Image (cartoon, rainbow, N blue to C red):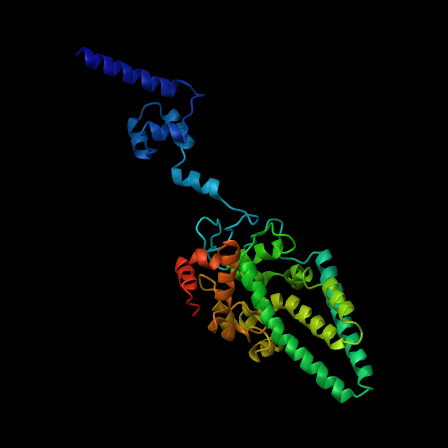
Length: 345
């Protein structure tokens, strides 16, 4: 009987201590240590001091919520890749635009319009100047000049497609928003898979402006200067190459649009295979996003993927610095397969 009285008194003291002080709070660690589960049913069934019971419930966070809040990533972090566990990126329901880079917008800013216009105008001027010099070297032979210029432009188109694939592969798989020069491009590409239709709502200059940094005026000017006036085809090649790399992001945008959304001329260019099509690019948007990286025309995709080109590059990178491609992290079996020397699709 004495034990029962003591137990009852202790229980009343404990209850009054919990309910009598408004400043009293219980941390998740205290709850775990005391083995008190944050059960709504058990608290409500007590029916003692209901006001304090509500406060008690609000202060307790389930362990899962605590873990998610502490592991949330931003575009500046490694692992900010759709498909990776803990990336913080989720695919919204419906075709809702989702900007993943802080401060980014879908509309073209005046500085973007100025940057894109000046860059593309300069590339056109470099190309025209190169053709003019070439014509002078050919003593005004327009046919020869035209043939050489067309051959150079076509070869630049093929190499630009290859270059867009290497760029796309690299920014999809390595680096983050803090990476010098390429950080903005990396964050945009790595977050793109969470809401791929967002790109269709970007205005032209907003969409391509980031690529004016690596493929801008300084790049073509430096190459032209190094090549010299005696090698105009080099200047023409890289003027076209850089313009196509900048334009690749707009070709990419078109590949996410329906035929009804596209201008008939653009649709014709796409159907002719001059720019990447919807179906070929849709193959890239399948986890772990390990192929079909080329987005100028997609001409090089079959050869590159069939030869295991990117798997070989990933193995080289891993052997040099131990850094895993994001595709490996999404699909560990791909890592095992690549390290075993199997580069097949």
